Length: 154
Length: 455
Image (tube, rainbow over all chains, first blue to last red; front, side):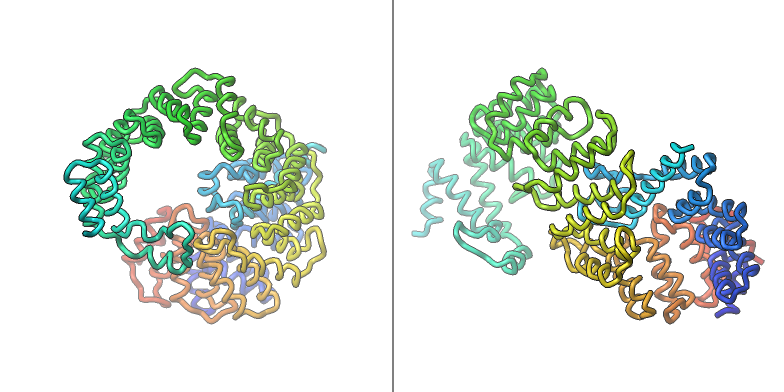
């Protein structure tokens, strides 16, 4: 299987590149992992950017970590938003960048009468139903408020 | 002589009472009513649904229509109404005609019946003048609602209130609206005011205030939402929090408890997200989520389970989290014929089994949760895991199914990633037969730069 994954990754499949990078990561081969995560990120394969950011973050290479967290945030990754805000809590420019991305999404978690919008964005308008998109919207609201409170203190 | 023969004789002689009775006789015996038990009679749910599949006798329905039509032509208002209704729903007649055509024809009969003084027909005439199958005429619509309301029709009186309150077909007149509100019973009064208070304009909020003063939980919740959104009213999360709590702890009355429980969840969400000047506080959030679980509210079970699972507002407690998810998974909510609305809880079950390295159990739960196609991230994850054999035996067939599902619609979260993977699978072959034509179908869904150069 590993040979096949390597062959596929080298042929240009970003999904295989991520898989190969994960294998290298589990073996402690960080540079190889970075190479293949980077390859997938270049092809806009969203799950790779956060992985790469996390490696740089762990290594203490904050400029690169921030760079790749930003890429993951652009893809709508909620965990990356939180990590980027924590890393750059005094950088207004980056906080505004995250805020902008959050505001582009549907975050109306308190308006249960907006049936069609909720159907379109959360997958359901039924009160008792709780779906992944709604979970993400709640997290985005929490991060947004965190940013607003950080900005108010600046 | 049978009842049918006696009625036939009289009806043929032009006896209006007999004509109506005969039409009703054929209608009752058509089987269209077999699902409706007689007064005092009880039937089981199994019987009720078994009967649903039985088709009604079209010959009897056609006979019923024929006699209703005869009665209508002789000027009987109730028969005219029945003819209108049957034409609209294509019961025993007009099967081949388009709905809009049937609508126009039925309106003519409803109007005739209304003109002859039949109150239910007046209400429907007024409704159809709202623009259903006929040209919209708000003045006529109001006129018929008012006429029916004056003859004692409560539902029409509700509409009259709305017309006066919103200036539909008549000049806006709050005093008149108020007078007609006095005519309504408690349930209609509340429903009408709730209808009037939809939206965030000045008038809607004024009507909402009436209900808020009465402590109506739906109105309290709606006003809290208005404070959160900050439309028509200044955004104020502290006020919203107070109102959500008041709504959630009030008496449900005729409402289902879900409304109250949802208000409590929203109070929890305000603490969880730390809106406005409300400090973020997970303990308080959990407190309100837990209060909502007392009403067996599925969403609240999931929210509480998540808090225990992640150790927010309480220490990390997997058995407690598991119990909450279990309750969410078992409770199908009030909508017993819909699919269970708890697949997020099932997915969390899977995550907890995965933590214990019980992969076979975990993936059983994941697959169950992935049956709900709204769990797109999980579907994409399962596709990858089955393709590469992460934690499970590789299964290309299953993986392909999940990739297909993840890439089905452009609004799917992993549409790009899933289609890219499928394109590569058919481009390179190896795990399936190489099929460049099929690969091209997937490449076509993606930006052109994704496609590799072919030798």
